[in-house]
Length: 50
Image (cartoon, rainbow, N blue to C red):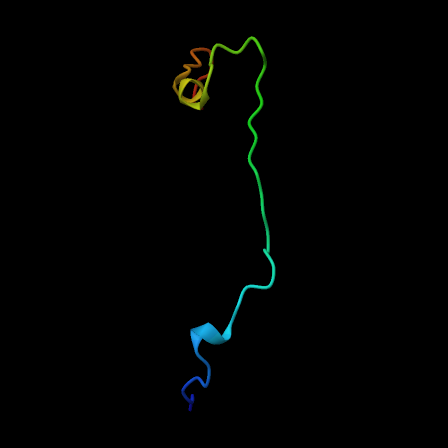
């Protein structure tokens, strides 16, 4: 049987950041999209679903 916890949340404190990541998106200079919204909306008429 589980006993109730003998600690309180304020008994803990952060010691270190576990992880940190950044996201970068690179594209060709001649790509006709100037931002992510344009990239998502950019049509690819030569690509067909299989």
